[in-house]
Image (tube, rainbow, N blue to C red; front, top):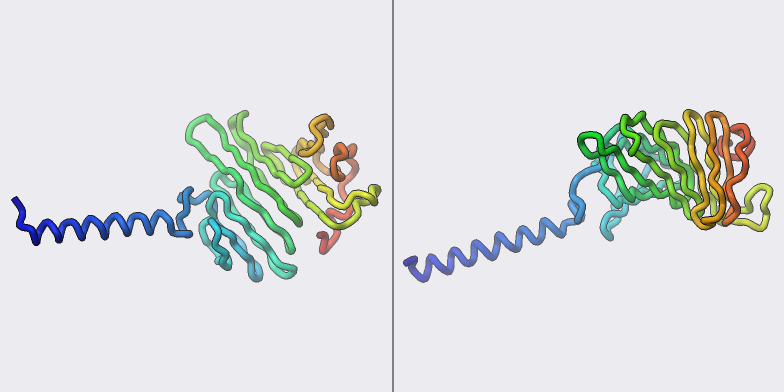
Length: 226
């Protein structure tokens, strides 16, 4: 039987080990999700990161975790490369949140949901072998679903929507490559539209998406768009 002194020493070691484990699990650099879903591949200016209640500046090549929120200023931008090859280019005065990104092995298919809180997001989505793969960009009033494409999404609040001056929040979607299905996130009765390469659509407030028009018909491609 161990001496009393040894038993106390072992109890102290056990207490310290458990305390250290608890501190690591609560650390903001790991969080509940832990595993990285991508990396910061490009960085211009100062970009803010919100992670598990903590705010910090973003560094180039930093790991990106699930539920991370990135916010750019008027003079900054950031590019994120997700596992599986999808690319996110976040423009100035914009904010996104990584809601979901699953890259399972085998034929299960990738599943990604990016929330565009405001501003402009350029997405490049590589071809996925599985028909069950999905890549979705959500705004407050629109849902954009794709599989293999390149497209721009812009969400605006507090500015009258062209053609709908009473509406002061809207989503523009412009397709550079492939096809994007766009539907209202707030009007379940509204029919979705399929936007082909070289076309764009607008979702004003709770109004159904507009019929696709040639790319460049709205402000989406204008320099400094916000």
